[in-house]
Amino acid sequence: MIGIKNVGNTCYLNSGVQSLLALDSMKQLILDDEVVKRLESNFKKEPKERTRLVYSFWLLSRDILKGVKPNPNRFISSLWSLYPHLSDYTQQDSVEFVQLLLDSIHEELKIQIEPEASTPDDDQTKIQKIEADEIPPVLDEPNKKVDGKPQVSGDPNNLYKQLIPKHDASTKIPKQKYTSPIQEKFGGFLQSELKCNQCGTPSNCVDPFFDISLSMPDENPQEHDENIFKKVYKLLKSVVSSLPLLNLLLCGQTYSLLQLLVLFFSRQPLDEDMNCEACKCKRSGSKKLRVLKVPDKRTNHVTFPSEINVDGTTYKLKSVVNHHGSSLAGGHYTSFVIDKLFGWWLCDDKYTKKVALEDVESSEVYLLFYEKVHE
Image (tube, rainbow, N blue to C red):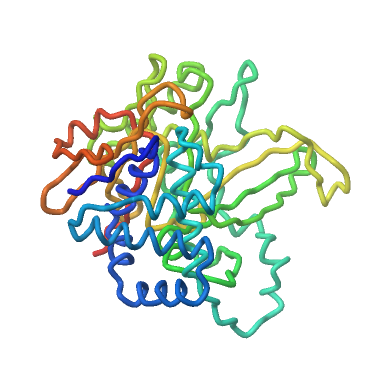
């Protein structure tokens, strides 16, 4: 395992690169000679700042994968040139770095999708409106409040399948003009449903995403319906392989991955009134999110199982980014990455060390990379 030199608070970058390179799909992309030829051609023809960044990332990554001691200076210079706000030698956010890098690679490698024969139903304005009866509900409604605090409702025995369902051919997803290896491997689609509290009319839109961030609830879990959390935890026994990995100790309280997913996807009141097309005026409303298409990679800001099975599809943990310190403006980033032959490794800038799975399980996780297991 090859480490990456820290040139001055660049641990956020090093941990992100190491985590991405732990993914089989990213390794295959980096080592794809046709992709390399395309990048070299782009670099010679029109060396834009984005092209320089992606090409330098390829050179850095190929060195790491081939066991050659990498020099990150060229990549860092290209990154700072394209994104100047990262260039002041202060601590940056590893999540933001990964998002910017994936977006840059997507833009550099994207190709136009050949348009199909259009039909009236293909009109983009109609595609953005998804009929409510085409989408099964995520959680039973309403999402009640007790003392002004949201209470999770619904049948926990079916929550996991509802939160992350199999792709439904009847669900309309906006047609994309472009695609790329990043979109194909990392991309999913998230549906946002707004509902008027007065007339109940739903309004839906679908947006692409590369990652999902799960926030910690402000409330203590005891202030929610304790029964549902007990049932959710019991449900997890049937969908994950390592229960000790599921708990997150935060301010003395224990949370699980599915608890946070339930809260993220449950219906929440809107901060501001929505424009209701049916009522022809502004009304109070609520918002609910649902994953329409699951990507091959999953990232979440929570503690983790090493393996998740969703309706027969298995996702395995491939890498972890950890943040050490009380603030994102300071502290330090490290990563854990798994190697097929040698197991888990700690990557702390240029320092690398083989570790046990227990070390990964007990770490303070910030960013997770799950990859679909292809049969």
